Image (cartoon, rainbow, N blue to C red; front, side, top):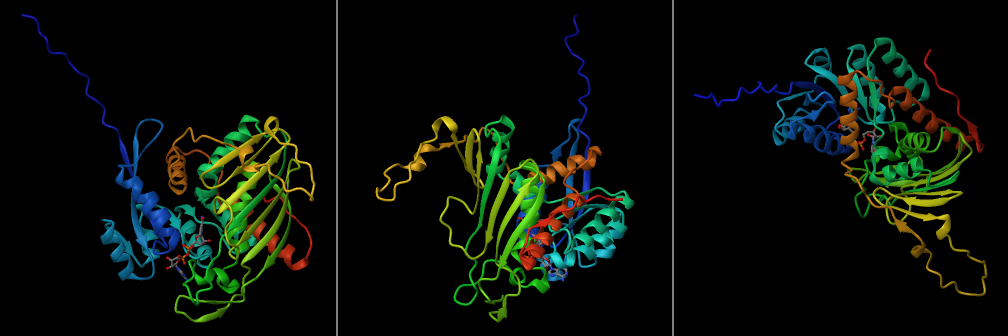
Length: 397
Ligand SMILES: NC(=O)c1ccc[n+]([C@@H]2O[C@H](COP(=O)([O-])OP(=O)(O)OC[C@H]3O[C@@H](n4cnc5c(N)ncnc54)[C@H](O)[C@@H]3O)[C@@H](O)[C@H]2O)c1
């Protein structure tokens, strides 16, 4: 009799490693929507992420905040076991390996210092601190403590900017000459319609201001796509002097609500970026970058990207006496998506977790964060002095 049973090798079950993450500031806009719901819970609910060796990493959050009632409500809503108002206790507990910070900017440095001292791996929103000095000190402390750090660079993961990166890498532009960025929308004053951003954004004493908020983003976008920022000239303006807060109380806006910046980049390109909460949108998306190169140009937004090659460039002739019937929009071609782009915050979380588990170098660290803070500080200094400011090379000792 022939034995027909085939001996099958025991299938190795993928090894699963669970990583505990302290999430501080989850009741806030960014903490809740982008980091908790769209990133960490999305990763948890899909059963984790796969590492290059086939093993799996899953995540377990503990919610940290000041209001126990709010935390309890969020925990119940999202089936989260752990929450606490005692940050120190969470930091002392070895179950939690990563400390993630989404607090208001002003509260960040103190919390990061504690987390670094506790030996936790750090993942944080930008800006990492309110001054270059403090942001560098944090980077230095992390290096001395030997802890890995990551700073949110979400705009690089926008589908439009990923398409732009693809265009740059393909050599489409030839030599890039200039970048014009337009970011912003109308943020209501808060009297006859509630404001759609927190009131602290408009108070300098509370860490507000569009330069501190947006220049850290422009720094990593420019340095990763076009070249390191070498100089900045910025004009900060507070166009709306009085706003109404969350309790319908009027307050004086002490921080700028618009910034008009010019950035000289390594390699010779010039970037000009307007950032404003006091403009009404007349473009396809809330942020757009128009890039001109010797061989082609592109206009990219959050999602879209359109291009015009030198061979498809019309030859306008200036004549103010004749209405121009040429439709300039028709000269642009849409760049296809050709890829699956997931939420950028989640994409970066997945990359950071992978780098943490694999022990690889992570370039978007606290030093990169400090360069963003430096650009914001230099922008404010430029506006006060009315002159161009050169940016120093930041290094850790
Ligand atoms: N990456 C991005 O695109 C992006 C966008 C907006 C904001 N941010 C950054 O994210 C951070 C949070 O911004 P937000 O818009 O979510 O603000 P938010 O006001 O909605 O939330 C702030 C959080 O901090 C907590 N908090 C407030 N004051 C505190 C204090 N004194 N001590 C401890 N906790 C305190 C709040 O309870 C809340 O959980 C800021 O640093 C901001 O610069 C990043």
